[in-house]
Image 1 (cartoon, chains in turn orange, brown):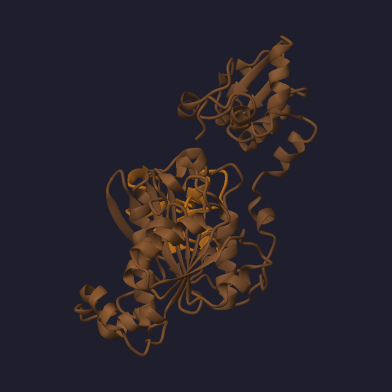
Image 2 (cartoon, one colour; image 1 turned 120 degrees about the horizontal axis):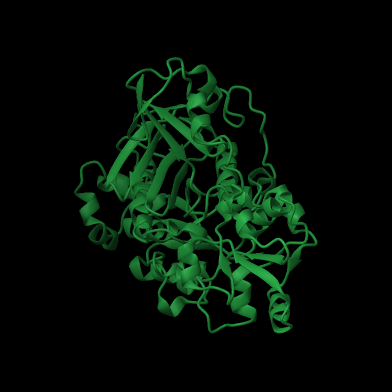
Length: 66
Length: 392
């Protein structure tokens, strides 16, 4: 199924969860937030949240500068 | 969602104040009532740096009655590219005092309170207590979690912003009405994973883009109009030039503001954010040389291999003679090891010693047991050995 991850179309296996998707992008999950269709999914809910076809997923990284 | 005003209105505006704030007063949403609320408001800005500069300037111009400034640092030449509250003649001065002087010139009706100390778990409640809201312009994760936790425990709104290169994020965290910083980012990234602006750089004007959002939201909360940025995260991309917002809900499992909180008092934030990882600390223990010792090794003609683990553009700004550039990332993914001689002592350095300690841990793990790194990095080299070179 096609999912838009950080603005780019990607082909993911059906049943892929937010947690699976993050793991495929980075080893470190600290300082990462994920929004699915413009709504942040709390980190505790990542593994129980499947991604659906045509979902727009944004994987955000915390920055510290000020 | 709209929220009631945070601040009660002052009794009156003087004739001078009516003249000064007339462009606010004729906006129906602000009016006399809103401006009187700003006059009574007390706002604390943490850090008079990149975000703090535009935040303080616009909060002062808007007529916020009392502005607190926390900063223990002094103005450096490298601040002037973005920290517009300070000027050339302020280099070397206290940032808090420099900011106060600029505010006095912009709006002498504002009362400025200086807190020239490093914010920590011992002073944060005392400093925050008198203020209506906190605007965050700090430059590190440890202080951001400290500010968030203190705001939640005190029930104060936290107007948050952060920046890096071309990217900015902003939100209002207020546990009584929405999520806190930990609902969005429960833990910081691992140490060394996300560079600071000192390591990675920042487009100067980005500070104004994000700092002005923070001021906008502070004013709305104080005077009670509009839809506050509570429960929404603004994401700004200066390269693509777009602003968008995503919804952030309160996390019922949040350890601080959730249903069953496990954090009920302040914690050790340096340890929580692991400013430098345990592996790096262990690797650096007993394997750290000074810039002076490096110079002596060079002068004695010792046979060693000096590696600069910073990024290419940092190397181009300033470098130590004879150093070979191999960025830290290549140590972490292992690519660096094949480029290193097996028969020479390896000496690593970076800008200030943190990244080289991380690389040293990886290097020792790969069997280079007698490798060392230079404490204080190229900055120590410039300060102690060759002050004619630039710093950044």
